[in-house]
Length: 273
Image 1 (cartoon, one colour):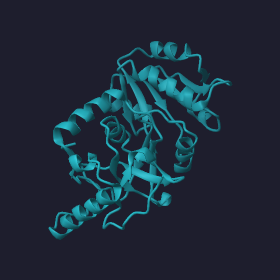
Image 2 (cartoon, rainbow, N blue to C red):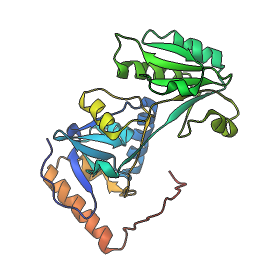
Image 3 (cartoon, rainbow, N blue to C red):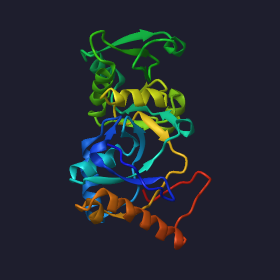
Image 4 (cartoon, one colour):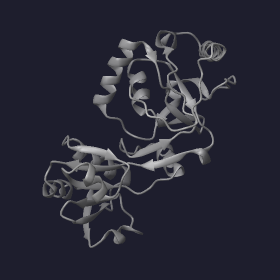
């Protein structure tokens, strides 16, 4: 359950990990890699971003970090809490396949019992259809990808993405224009474009106990807090939640008093992530 929190100078809180749940699946190898890094570093640098929902918290960004901390046996986590849905921007990743022959991609997906591929004549025909996504090949073929009538959409969507992600030839992009992606990646053979989701739709999926596939939603968070570098030993300790909340408040106050909090209004590039 969500507890009453003290007011910090930044929207950071210490919360019970059992109260945090995901809206998307995670990639196990990425979780394993992060567990090793967190163990070696001993610090939590960038807190997961969460939103309160039904006395719990849904992770908007940071599913891998949240899962890693849970697997490491942490009772609590530092999170950044966002409460104003209107200030969030939600983008959708497109997925593209490289090197693998497009006919193999189409055959591989067409053989899945959870979905159906319906070939159409142009991109204009993708509008107004109930679909999981559409698939465009380098030869110019376009397919609507639909969940079969007896299959839950989230189940079908996860099976779809797992199938081509497991080939090892998938890359993400925010661009849904095939020719523009091809200019950057000449070896592209197929592009998978998902519908634009709303924040409300994502929360609804999470609330229903389902998950979207990893690597589809991309939340733009204004005022994202980075490089907290909090001591994981203290966070993992058996100290009560109230003490850890006071510890976080003192940590933030110390950073403020020593001029270690900076706000950048402009977009930035980080080259050490």
